[in-house]
Every structure is written in C-alpha cells, then in structure tokens.
Image 1 (cartoon, one colour):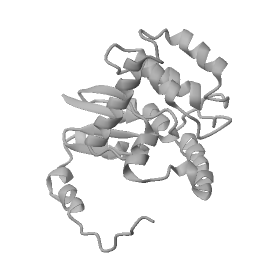
Image 2 (image 1 turned 90 degrees about the horizontal axis):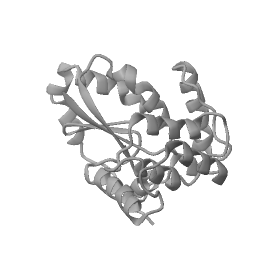
Image 3 (image 1 turned 90 degrees about the vertical axis):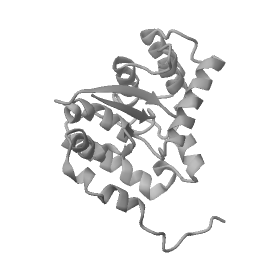
Image 4 (image 1 turned 180 degrees about the horizontal axis):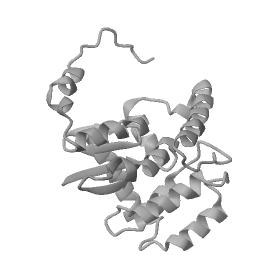
Length: 214
C-alpha cells in the first residue's frame, strides 16, 4: 500500500481538476490518501515566483485552458466571478474540520465545489458563513491553533520540495500538476521506467545560464 500526500490550495483550478480526476487515476491501486491544504502564495513567495494569474497574458490562457481541460475530462467547472482571491479563510476552514488539520474527501470536495461550481464569488462573506454552517468545523477556523497548522502544512510542503499545486508526494517522489496524474498512476503500477535512471538523470542536468534577480 502506498501513502500519498495531496498538496492543494482551493485557489488553483488545476488542483480542483486533479481532485476530480484522482478517483479514476488511482482506481485499482492500494493506497492511503492524505489531503493536505497549503497556501499556494507561500510556496510562490519561498521560490520567488509569480502566480499564473499575476501575469496578464498567462492569466487569460490559464482560464481558457482550464475550461478546455474541464470540458475534455467532463468535469463541471465554472470560473468564479473574481480570481485570484484570498483563499486563507477556505484553507483554514478545511484545517478546522479535522483534529489533525487534514480534511477528509467530503470537506475538500465541498470547498472545491464552493469555488469552482456556480460562478459565484468564492470569497463572499455570506457564502463563507453558509459554507461554515454546512461543514460544522470541529474548531474555530480563526483560532491561532488552526492558523499555525496551515502554516505548518505549507512549511512541510516546502521542506519536501513542493513548489506548486496540485502536487502529489509518494515515497521520495513528487508529481506536480493535473497532467501528472497518468505519471502518478504509472508509478503506482510499478512502471519499469522509474527504475531505469531517467528520474535521477533529470535532476543532474547542469544549469547553463542563471538569471540574477534585480
């Protein structure tokens, strides 16, 4: 049995697509799955990156591709009325729904659907209040304890090399992105490619040019 950690942030449409695609990707395999909310902005800050929605042409392309991908994979998806938005309240709500700060699939699904179905404002205060009532968290999402657990999840992800979401950690390997689900499935199935050295050789390629940050 494999232990899989799924790192995600509700602000990411690709994380939503990956969440919806997971059951099919993992079908037939023995595994445990740990849903782990992290703050995507924290990952970006640590690695000195801009988010895709912070670069205007990339933002437009991202939304177009997401809508296309959803259509291709028959996943219901409507873009929220505003994006990006501050996901902290939703992330803390997810953490607060479990004593260990690790939400189950129902909680994760409910919050993803809150964001990516219906086309409403994901950060609307009234909608957030209604969502909180539905999920009935075990702890106060605004408590210092919950905030610290979300920060700990994010720091742990960074320590394991996570640089974006969605990301799946299995053994010593990270699989990043919605389009990595077939690769993840192949690894779980024991695909011989993973024992042939290409995984390690990819990390050994030298950097010919390194840009300095101004």
